[in-house]
Structures are given as structure tokens and as C-alpha cells.
Length: 411
Image 1 (cartoon, rainbow, N blue to C red):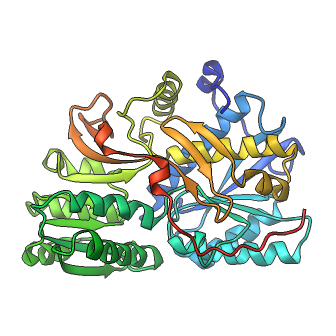
Image 2 (image 1 turned 180 degrees about the vertical axis):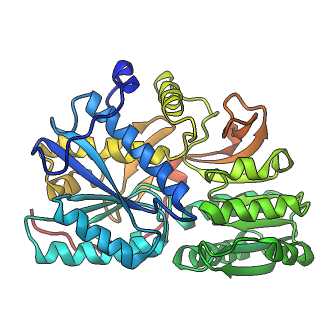
């Protein structure tokens, strides 16, 4: 990984006008930038912009300056295809997206079709957060690489935690009603049956994505069920509002999440959630790391004080892109994709490997706990995320079997 130049990090990122220079590598960021899920997308965009700034400070990608261009998809698959076409029409051949597996599914299909019909103008999809396991199994694509651990990989950590706590006799599963939420629920049921068959699932409920304004009725059902813990894959406003409703209702038991660190969640949770909310992620900012990583976090939060350092995988993705392009000696997406297969890199929180057989990243994970008075708080609060060595899961332990049968193009 290239070193961060401190002086350059302090400077604002300069963008080249669209289509103005052949020495620009453009990356289309297709995610929600408005509406209820807008804060999640805006946060992701800022992380990618900052990661691009790092690369540009060190000479860019094979000498080309990186420009991240935001496209608002409103978490809608059809709108995402409109935005994808706009990006392609502007000559952009790299796409990043993460909020919504329904969106990712549509993008995978559309990019597959585009690349078959337009040889020499291929587009590469780098996925930073859409974690439906199908994307690296039966729906795998040569043109798709995932830089987040999938729903099954994260659920392994969640269910291991449940199995290790004999006081948890029952759980309530709640999630968003689309492919990702269904995958989370299915994995929880399947894994608990094996690891903790004595744990009773007293509720398994899906709700509309980004439509619920008040989760109080859902929380009342959870409380009435007698559950000892909540398992949820909710993200964005659905995560924030669910946890707020639970805390306001006096819930004082574990809430096991994928995205408890969503923007606004800490403020909504407050001190009442300390010690209760858990999050499975590839980063806990208060876990020991290198001086370079500490500097990166500090600089990012100084530049974007309204955002906490959260999408560490955006940096992993961009540095993988840079390293693959350097290895290929080209910024052509086809050559970069072949170079990225099987690539390994030492990251800030452990070793990273991009599997060749299904294009799924293997990375260390942590089961972080929402805590009081951490060294680095979030959202301007004396609250944040902590993890100890016992909460650390090595990358190799996250590897799972795959059913991927990938068609590769000819070089």
C-alpha cells in the first residue's frame, strides 16, 4: 500500500472537469445521495473522495489522477440503471456501489450485458457494501469484486457470539424486506440451528426498506416475544430508527447488528445503549493500528467533522484498484480485473486477499461493542466502538465454500 503524504492530505482534492483530460481515471459512485438513506451514501462518497485524494497525492493510478463522480440512485434499482448509463455515456469504466443488494443485483446484470455487447468498452463493478451471498456464489460475475464480507460471513460471527452466551435463550430477527434482509434472516436461522439449537427464534420479521418512520410497533412485538437479543442487518435510517425505538422503549438486552455504526445511530442510541449494541465490521477505530492509519482517521475526521471514519473498506478497495492497475501496467478494466484476482495486501487491520474463484475479499473482522468514554468517540459524543483481541476474527476464519462458476473473458 502506498504511503500517505500528510501535506497533500491537508489539501482539498482537486477534480478535473468531466471529459477534460485523458489523464483522469473516473470512478462512478452510484448510491443514495438524497432521501432517507442519503446520509449513508453521502458518507460513503466522502470516504471514496478521500481515498482518491490519497492516491492522487502519491501520483495517481499509473500516473492518472482519480476522480470520484457521485450519481444519486435513491436506492432504486431502475434509477441505478439510469445512472449507470449516464456514467457509461461519460466514459466512466469503473463503478462502485454498496447500499442495497437489490441495486447491486441490477448493476451486475446490466454490466454483464453491456460488456458482452461492447468489447473494448468494458465496465468493472467494485462493490463495497452490498453483501447478498449470491453475488459471490450462484450469481458471481467476472466483472464484480466485493470488498465487504458477505452476510453469511458476518452471521458466522454473530451466531458464534450468541452460542457463547448461554444466558441468551431466545432471539428476534428483524430486517429489511429485500434480498439482503432475507439473506441475513436465512443465515441466522440456519446457523443457530447448528450452533445453538437450544436458542428459540421467537420472531423473524421483515419490514419495508426505508419506509418505516416509527419502529415502536415492531419493538413492542419484540418486547412482548420475550426475546433475549435482537439480530438485525438493518442499515441507514432503518438501523437508526430501530435502535432509537428500542432504547426509548427501555430495551436493555443485546442488539446484534451489521451496521450499528450507521450515521446518526450513536446520537439516537445514547448512553442507554452502551454495552448492549454490537457491530460486526472490518474496522473498529479504537482497536490498535499503525501510526499511518491513526493519521488517516484523524485527517479524515478533521476534513469531514460531520462524518466519522466508517467505510474503511473504501480505502481497501481503492488501494486494491491502484495495485492491480500497477501490476497490469494498464488502467484498462479487463486487465485490472485479471490482475486483481488472487491479489493480496497488508491492510491497516490485517492481511487482505481477493479470492480468484469468486471475487470475495477475505479480511479480518471484529465484533465491536458500543462503549462509553472510548479513546475516539463518534458524532461528537463520549461514546464509540471498542474491541479487544478476543473480539478479533482472522481473515482465514471467514472463508466459506463457494458455488461460483465464473465465465472469464479472453485476454
